[in-house]
Length: 191
Ligand SMILES: [Zn+2]
Image (cartoon, rainbow, N blue to C red):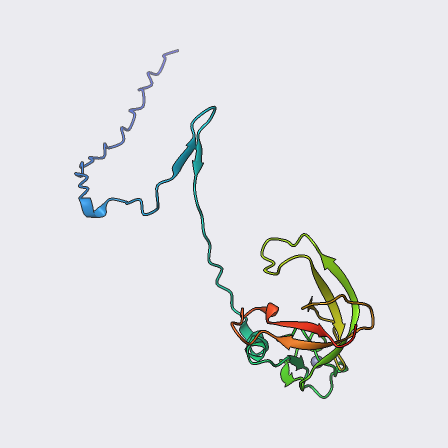
């Protein structure tokens, strides 16, 4: 048998890409700059500890609930209600709701006539408040029943000692308002 000579396949060499070297030009203007404040080294031993102060501004929108906070600023307690005549829930809501939890209709607003008188449903004393609670401690957190409401909102007693069934009147921080829910509180009508 005659061996057929097989010719080795020619390897196709990939064409070399010609790379054109670009000159990297970094001008002073294009350099990334450090825009912070340099940290302080608090201690170096046994390990480096730096002091790195941080601050944060929380931007928060009240959205559809804005009328509630506008009301507090002028001494009004405003509640939402469902304007849908076919909805089984006719009572008022505080904290307000943008939409009816029962039928999802956009809520309407009602200002409670002053003075707003409520009854303490329950209470608790806050001794160790969490971060962000901007009230001096200890304070009494009170859940207050307000006639016509579907809810029993929480707030705080401005002074005095609460008891279940105590009549209280809504008060407002209209001078230097915090623009938060802390702008209303309850004051005792009886002791
Ligand atoms: Zn509804």
